Image (cartoon, rainbow over all chains, first blue to last red; front, side):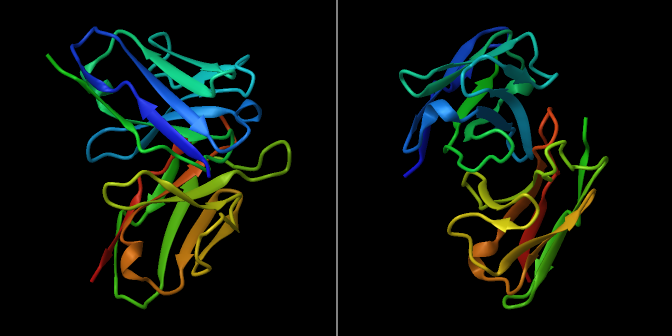
Length: 116
Length: 112
């Protein structure tokens, strides 16, 4: 059974940093790209970032480029999202999702709140 | 960026009746590999999104056959043949052809 478990969410002040992690199991992690998608309260889905299966390529939404960094550890089956210079508009539920062109499995999400 | 536009934004449906959702992309979703990476997701209240349909018309594992997808190029449709109570939620389309990945704004399915 595929499982994606996000952790690391919390309350942070504007300008602060937070690191999210997604632990994956139930599938060959090293052969799949991974993604972060966020959803602000009461709003729709917004793609944030994608990392290739090997970690050699990473892609970002313009809204987070230069502030967020995606990485993965294929020895631990984890994918992380380092979020710096956080803004109020980054407040959202952050989902980890599997695969490159089709997001076939999603985690339950990690809540990030940016507020003073 | 490819803009995904969904209509309607809200769809009140009677139980047992069909429902239809439309999704239009600002440019063709045909990838250079020949595939069209258009997916549909269901998000029930308080739940993460769940993949229903991928590559226009392929039902994902465990998805009831009352859900079907169709379309080509820039115009796509998700249909529910007979709405059941557990279908309440928001339905999103997403294109996986080009980066950045983009989602439609969602259509909310409500029971009349």
